[in-house]
Amino acid sequence: EFDVEKLVEKLYEAIAGDKPNHLPLQHVSRTISDKLAGKKFLVVMDDVWTEDHTHWEQFMVHLKSGAPGSSILLTTRSRKVAEAVDSTYTFDMPFLSEDDSWKVFEQNLGSAAIGLDPEFVQVGTEIVKKCSGVPLAIKVLAGVLRGMKGIEEWQSIRDSNLLDVEDKESKVFACLSLSYFHLPRHLKQCFIHCSIFPRGYVITRRLLISQWIAHGFIPTNQAQQPEDVGIGYFDSLLKVGFLQDQDEDHFQLGRDKVTCKMHDLVHDLSRKILQDEFVSKIETIDQTKKCRYLSLTSCSGKVDRKLYGKVRAFYVSRCKLASKKTMKKQRCIRSVILKYINIDSLPLFVSNFEYMGYLEISNVDCEALPDAISHCWNLQALHVINCTRLANLPESIGKVKKLRTLELDCAWNVRSLPQSIGDCDNLGSLYIHSCDIKDMPNSIEKLENLRVLSVVCCTDLRQLLPSEPFGKLRNLRTITLTDCWALEHLPQCITLLGHLQYLDLSSCTKLRELPEGIGALKKLEVLNLERCKRLRGLPAGCGQLIRVQQLGLFVIGDRTKHARISELEKLDKLNGELQIKNIKHVKDPFDAEMVHLKRKNDIRKLSLDWSSRWEFGARHMEEKLSVEERTEEELLN
Image (cartoon, rainbow, N blue to C red):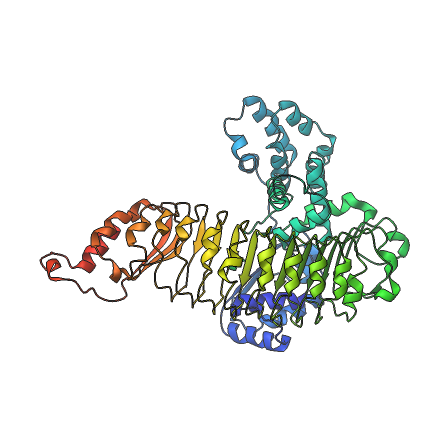
């Protein structure tokens, strides 16, 4: 899909450093032109498919103001694309040499390539040769072979007739098919589900895993949480190359935004395997009788109720939907994704999918979700994203007893959560991002299964909960409170959350104190205090947090309840950036010697903030170094 409007929005974001957030296209275009005026630029576009010259002209008009010498570099597998854009230069990329092919093979084998027996090397060399220097084919086959320990399994891959085709693209497809054939059953169905997304779609890991759970691909009766099992499945598909381009920024702004994509050929494979069980275009009703995966983008006709039949996964973007009056109850649908839809009857529409386990509503123009949401008794995940007119959730949400995940993201008009949310006994993850809430409902104390609480960019939030109720959430593993500018303190009972591993308080600019006794959180691995500029000091005992890897800020206070700088000594796992602030409050400069900063090899950037010059007593006057200089020397040496 070559969507000019989306591409222009991405250009704006790259140039202006901010999202357009529903700005008029004319304003976005003018900003791009002004920013590029008289400047050289390079635009890189990867894996382009559109051959429509008109679309290219509509896109290029936004780049006319750049200086001579500006360039656009694009990659494509179609020579017609190169012709459509009137390319000045074209380069045909050669395939890999045998030596380079083997290097790619070894890299994707990972640790399995270490000390490989000669017999495996011989068979592996023959397999690589059959890949004809195509990187994707080599990568995917290596991903499958890394899990095979027997030489017979390697030989079966080598001897497969699928690899004997001559055409390069057919050979790649054969390699992908062979790799799919050797996947375990549970990974096959998880992979096939990814066919529902459009080509080039950015897949968010936690949303994908919620969909797998809704379809029953992940068992829910094990000791391990299904979300954790799902991460293992996700990683397995990454290793075999069926998912790729993982974004390693696991907690971008606290949102747990691990994302990935599918290579176009891998995406084609997922749809080819389904054959007529997958439908992406509405042409004739007869073609949809076996449809289990329905993925519609920018369809001109109205989506008729006859299409739903046996559908289990439903993705629709920029289409018109039938209302409840023309639709019966649907028993097969397990996951529904609605994007960019202007539908007044959304409440009626959703309530028809009573067996639905996953509902994602994104950029949909609606003011409220219906009370009828309670009819969806099987709903396990509800994600409401960029629905800027949404004002509230219905009280009936408490009747959705199977709900495991609830997300509100960029629902700016939502000012409170219903008290009935405490009746969602199975709720394990609660994400409230960019909403206008001021307080959390007291009923949250009843959510004993809550493991993830993420409240991000809720700038009016004054407190989480009173101390005693919050202490009942003993299963919490993750608390994210990023950019909560009005938050001044945390409940004292947070120190009772013995399973807590992740606490992100970054950019809580009014936060003044952390609870005393925070050192009791022995499992804590992240305590992110970056940009907590009003923090008076860390509490004494924080040096007991020996598992902490990310801290960001260590503030030395001036009271006995505050930690001394020497408490940094045992925090040997710290990495990334660290700012040590208010060194003026160090009582004894020899405390600095105990910090052993040189042993903390993973700290990438260190900032020392003295705040003001030292005032020191007469007994220090005879020292050759001032206290300030002495402290700096002890810290760095």
